[in-house]
Length: 211
Image 1 (cartoon, rainbow, N blue to C red):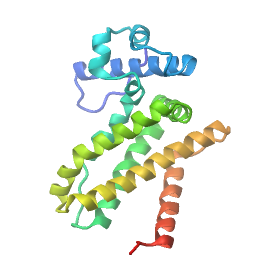
Image 2 (image 1 turned 90 degrees about the vertical axis):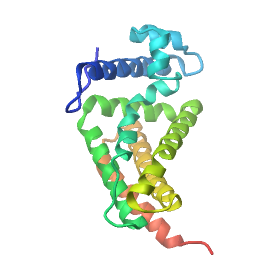
Image 3 (image 1 turned 30 degrees about the vertical axis):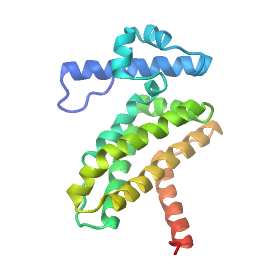
Image 4 (image 1 turned 45 degrees about the vertical axis):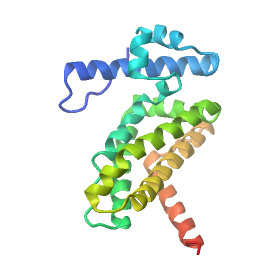
């Protein structure tokens, strides 16, 4: 059984819940890599993880969602986003800082890093996982956008644009990191993230807004 690193202040029940979710994630990853998503059932994932189907649905929802359980680190980070100043530039910098911190934590956690790498590789070959990833990202963003807008004093559109940009940078960095790993290259996730930010910024500046 994989033991998860417990966040500060996490109680025994919360720690056990996190360990169980990671066991479900591990079981889903193993089966998806062996059989593919379509040929894997929820019952098989639950049995390998040592949990009931009821527990699986309570913690994971769908079989596709099972491999994204650890993505909650990025979702939770959105709840803490704030900005000194009520403009899109300061909010974008604040979002980038939050996502960069979570990527740094991911980079420092060898087991979590390996899980993420396996998931990003699977996404490249399993359309149903790509769809689940996009749906989860959109749902999570929509949940926090009104709260962030109220907190920083902006309307929802600039907040949605800033969140979309920061999420695109993060997702592109994770995908590039996985592609390099597939080529046998050792890539620094944080360096890739910085490169993606620079390149997307240069691309946006070169094109400019459309009239």
